[in-house]
Length: 377
Ligand code: KG4
Ligand code: ZN
Image 1 (cartoon, helix red, strand yellow):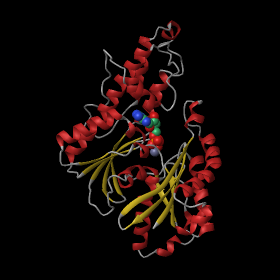
Image 2: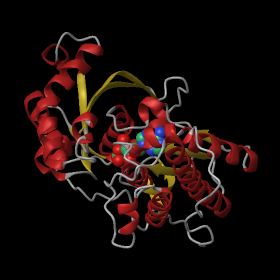
Image 3: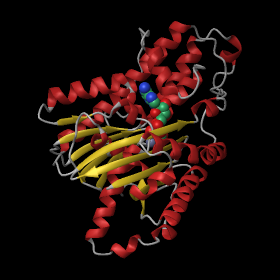
Image 4: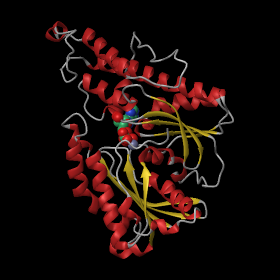
């Protein structure tokens, strides 16, 4: 079965073509057109600007995806496509609408079934699109513990079986990726913050540390807002900029230039990254203690963080050596459409099994976006 997927939930326009044979997923092509540079000037993603860029980029991205999959154009390849998958949420409403409408148009003209997919679900399906692993959809790796870390989410999830999830914990305030982005802004390091903060942290050797958020809480929740504020106040203390010191206590704006030197930035980055990673590791270990899992899956943009990958692997290997660990390939950590292929296929098959195959005739009419779409309650 050939599947085309489209993703436009935030600031990446992405498309992919995959093939499911027996129970293996093969990605024939996946293309991501990033808008990061455009939004960097604003210090974060501007929803309307993102939507305008998606409109501009969707057709070229889909064209390129067909070309990379070996077809001269979408017109030459669409006959092969059996199914279309699209992100319907969560995400930015204006951005989601562009991708869904594009997918609906293709579904209508090409007469192909359309499957709405939850973006978070896509991140959790990264293990099945890892070519080197060749993980079969029928292989039993469940129950799996999932940690989803991105700019919008920080969730611990019990992945019970295909398409079945239970939320175990989440952030009470900022997502961990958002905290990386805000900390980068405090130090004037640019956007997105994750990659630059972790690069800057490499030279860090701080003689201070930040306390690990919710270290002694009994639940599986996270909090990163207090840690970000602790970084801001430490930065103000280190800053040589007197005028800024003077306004301490008047909620200084993070855009302020604190005149930090490179070593101070490195030390702040390292202390922040260590505390953020420790908070994630702590709750992963706590969740693993509460129930027996067969595997652990990491997903989302922050999954690119090297320290996080290392610390989690070491801690799990040490305490639960029998557990299978699935870290996504770096190219699949950020938003992409390849990750939508396994859930698109599985949802389609599950609906067919329910003997309501008629559901997929012109079903595009009923699909709507949901910016706050939940994975489970
Ligand atoms: O999954 P994603 O691409 O988009 C959302 O769905 O939010 O995640 C983007 C987030 C951003 O906050 C970015 O700063 C963070 O992932 N990120 C990282 C790293 N690379 C990206 N955070 C920490 N370390 C990294 N290396
Ligand atoms: Zn994402």
